[in-house]
Length: 177
Image 1 (tube, rainbow, N blue to C red):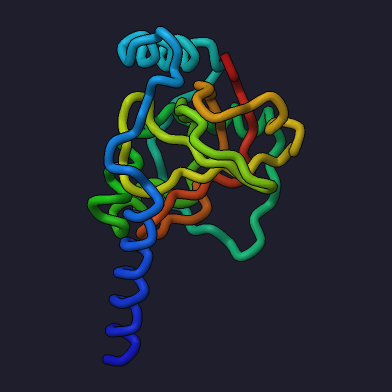
Image 2 (image 1 turned 30 degrees about the vertical axis):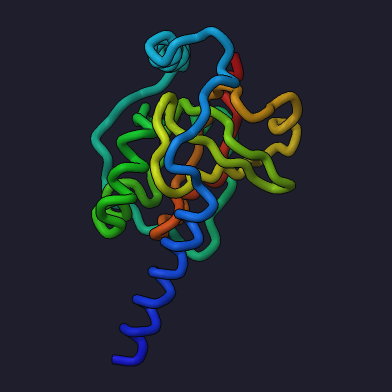
C-alpha cells in the first residue's frame, strides 16, 4: 500500500513539474511564414524520401543492455509513425503506449523545442502536447546546426516511456530541412 501511495505521489509530482515547464499555448511564430499545413506536407514529403520497410509491429522486450544499431540497420527496421499520435497515446494511457511502442524502431518528424548536452526534445508540428519526446543521438555531430523551431526527421528505438516522456535512443538524424 505504501508503495502504491508513493508511486501516485511521484506520478503527480511529475505531472505538476511537466505542466509548469510546458506552456499550454506554444508560440509558433518562430516557424517563419510556413503554415501548419505546409509543415504537415513537409512531414509527408520527408517520410516519402526515406527508404523504410513497414511491417506489423511485434511485442518486444528491451533487454538491460541494448546494442547500438547502425544507421543502415535503423533505417532498415524503422516504421513511419506520427509523433502527435505517439505522444497523445502516452499522455492518455502509458501502459498502452508501452505495449505498442516500447522496443520498436520508428521514424518521426517534429519541431526541435530544446537541445541539451546529450539529448534534445522535439514536439509535433503545430501541436503542443503535454510531456516530452526526447531524442538521444548516437552521433553527437547530429546536434550540430540544429536549433529550436527547426523541422527534423529522426529514426531510433523507443527505449523508455514514462508519464512525462517518450525516449528515443539509438537515434540518428535523417533529415533537417
